[in-house]
Image (cartoon, rainbow, N blue to C red; front, side):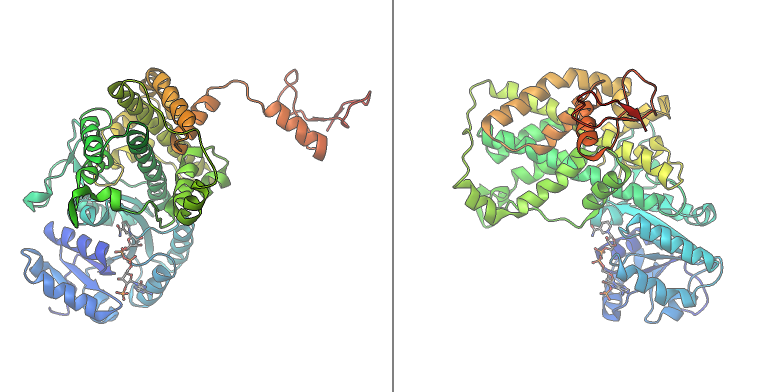
Length: 505
Ligand code: NBP
């Protein structure tokens, strides 16, 4: 490799995501310089790539950061795909001394958006650009087409846009269905790319975080559907797989439903007479983005209870030892089902769809508030479009969300859109029956239940917070507003009233 700058872009961090993103860019004709903190990882990757056409010609490895940076055409674009937090800061600190004014650093990791805001400000002050771009789709997505959620300066985006659009997942412009012929092993060049500029500084990483928060609920709702079929209907994994496969042909058509059907049908590689899912321990891990989303909903005052429940459900699952002990002490009502199995399966399907609408409504409400807090102008129809392909929550359903925001960009809540309103009206009777059956049988379905509580709470003109506010005034003189006065006037009495006057505060 000559020392003249000839690469289109550079990438630092050759773990699973970095390697796959490099191959994706090379597939699309880009020359990519690569660097990794531990050199052996870089050399092993470059050696491996020597056998992969056309990537072998287009991937160039460097042992020193100085040579790596010098090999990239200006304005240089360098993607970081390293461990979030200190790893990203350390990578930036070592990279910046070699970069020059106008160059662009792109963090493709799952950074916290406040870190991205901080880094963007620091790096802009040094005359360079910083973009925080969420990358979703895991290993396969990075290799063949992820959903990419960039935030940063307009100028940096203009420079990055052709590459991001080339490597992103693509969907059919008419139907919104992803093109996913990975097996062909050829880059997908046709269709609408699943990427768009989302706004300045931390906007891209915030949207990626909310994507993950929604993903947590989506997964939990699917798990609760499975659990009801398993516990209440006593169905076997392959029977439940067939149900998910069937659901995937309709409005629930999505990547997560598709892989759930695959997982449930999978036999145990150690013993083909049983199913692998039955051998997987029921404790779920997490990397924190669902928790960040829930913390953000609390910070911004947005009622996103299904999102929080999905995180809590993982925490509860992790208490395996305690749960096993408690199961011997705390008795429930026992599981009984005496209805029609097929009918109940369809009720679960409707409960799942209705709850899913609530989960997305919570995610978009959160982003509506966040854009005011952080001074972004998020385009929700575009965000739903970006999520149609490549990412973990990709689903047919997202086209309906784009339609909803195209019809009314100021939509206060997704549930108020006529399509989703009608779907909730149609599904709520089934949803209530499922939640009631779960409660009566002692089966934990926290996401179904909290989503229903959200729906009922949001559509209630009157809630019991009148009593709550009176309690607050009673013990803490926190004041209250009156139903027979204008909003914004606050009153207090010394409780119990006993003839004492009410005062306006
Ligand atoms: P990891 O998150 O496991 O990070 C490993 C990489 O970070 C290695 O290249 C490692 O270099 C490098 N690194 C570390 Br650790 N500390 C560093 C430092 N101080 N300076 C420079 N490099 C450092 O890799 P990953 O799973 O490929 O994920 C990469 C990013 O993509 C993460 O931010 C992750 O959150 C995000 N992401 C991952 C997925 C996924 O499915 N895995 C999906 C979407 C987004 P070394 O070889 O020298 O140790």
